[in-house]
Image 1 (cartoon, one colour):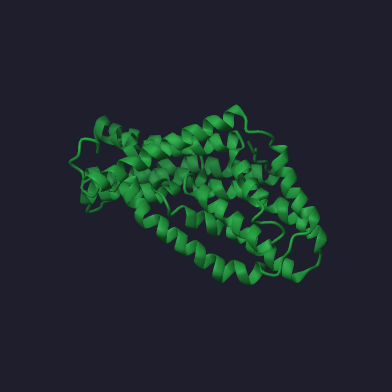
Image 2 (spheres, one colour):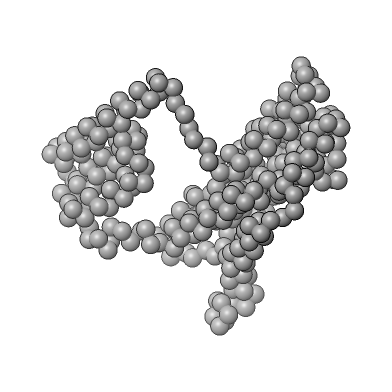
Length: 310
């Protein structure tokens, strides 16, 4: 786990910011509650709670999760809603879908399955010494992983891998302007591919699940995992192809990996050794979870919604 460090000046700024938030948040909330408005009293109290939470989030005066739980708690105390109503969204199926995808992603990172997938693709015979195929494989792995975990987590995970490859390749092409364009493309494609991959499944990006939840609660439209993928995967694939044609090929077609760079990628894969028990367990859990996400929608399409299987 990476621990963030701050300079003395940054630590001082953080302390002052948090202290300001602890004072300003309740003052802002009280001011909104006392100001004459056209809002009914319950709505005015909700506005005050929202303002308080915004200030606390912006200043990080309290841990973000504590602030999130403070909102419904204050709504109960102020008589805006009952406990059942205020905390009901925390039991929404979308929340548990979030939790499941986060656990899978964390399992992949902890057991380094993400590195194995990445270096298996980058060290494949298809990639060889081609710089273009390397960056295409890199983008493909990034997009695939982003289908099952958040875009931010995928980008943070893949950036060091890309930097390691570029560092080795850069030793052979110092001062090469064409290589600089290639390095820029590889770093940018990390975030591009992660964003594109996140469109493929509902769990690929938090807004996807939020959108599904809104469709269900406001429009009565229940999209299955498969319903989303039927549209999302083709859009994702087409966008990835467009990314390769427009962005990657012009910047990578003349780049070739030297023997040392090829050996470095192969060595990183070799260091991982044979697949350990933890990795196998993650693969099994991942496979079962994806099957349970996808198969109900497949059966519904094949057999109809009224069938006993669906």
